[in-house]
Length: 201
Ligand SMILES: [Zn+2]
Image (cartoon, rainbow, N blue to C red; front, side):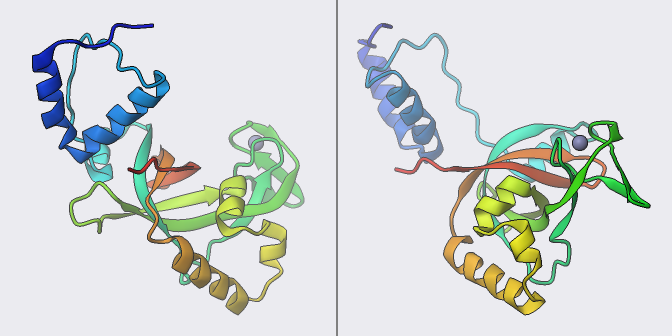
């Protein structure tokens, strides 16, 4: 086990730092992971969390992955909901006369109908909470979020699908999630790879 911090001055400063909500959240995780013991700190740096837009500006032209706090909005005007996916990697395939080529696996693969759900994500770090970005959810992530499999969903009428979207928005659009995001340069959107629950106070 590490050393418990004794330094009075450090404790005092720590109290000040704890007033900062974003920092408190990070600190709590460290605290829990170390079985209720605060381990020694070699260096300490507070970095204000960047907004998604700031990340985009910073990483201009470079693909990147990150975890970010966002809300998810389903859009009934958005027509792209499912597509044909590679059965090996669950990414979109190009179909041509019964054949399918997967650009990710770089070979001919089998395909199935799956989710390719275009959504909006709302940056919870942006000051007014109004910064939205285009994002896409594939199979498992969309399946879990919507609570219905792509095949069953695609068999529903457009009106029923829209009603389902509205109902999910009512239940979930106010929730801030921790999203595992991957920026897709080509389509200029984020891929939501995972939706994690946010640790709250
Ligand atoms: Zn593939």
